[in-house]
Length: 364
Image (cartoon, rainbow, N blue to C red; front, top):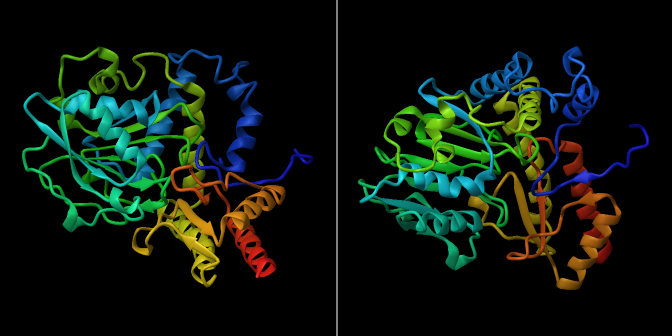
């Protein structure tokens, strides 16, 4: 390990994992708990694996303060499969669902839901290239809607909902793939929360779904068993072979979060990390410009441009040579993006801050 190349990982996903978790997984990879097998080799019906599985669920419940009237599921297919499963389960015939449009992923969720039933936009900021999230005043939905869907954080555009709309008796369903467990939230405000693991929770391959039990009780029935949430809730997410190694890693990441002091400490550190970079942008006299409006800025994905296109290319090339990984912005926005998820250390953001300041000074 001593000769390992050192880089600053700002990838948007799959993203950085805690070094301590990776080292523990390495030490347990071949012989897990003196079983003579890797966790990847053993039966998902074994008592050893079941303990890992249930511990991950309990750690998630504890960290996120999930109420007892919610199920916690470990699924496969990523958040993209949930774009279809949500309307398949909860958009009943004769009902409509509303979608709050704040970026590329909400757009994909809406398009998928249109293949299942009747849906419409409750609000959209597409006309300003998603440089902010819709305000509560802009969001309109009907009290008879099956649900309201929201994407809490937008990786591509670098925006985030800092407050969530109140939807009354209409269930609020949130795709939190890119900011789940980055801060404390009130889970009871949501009918369902889902998230792909590969940004804050662990490696790719696991999708977490947190669903209020009364929604499961009234879900649509005429769909394939494996696409029913009730199938997975009734079998403790063991209906079919789960992504066992991913769930093991997820449980270890959750354990690491507990050791960090829980979500309040993690949220404070995430603010510190993001502000290191936003402060450079705000005090650069236009050398760096942020894509997102200040009131909608994401603490997870910091998007910005450099003064001109040639300088931007130079910035990204020199950043790469200096050991910064994943700083290229998405093609629909361009520019640069630093994804500072939970496992990205403060030191990485300090190093990026220094690099940005030095680059600006050099290019004056």
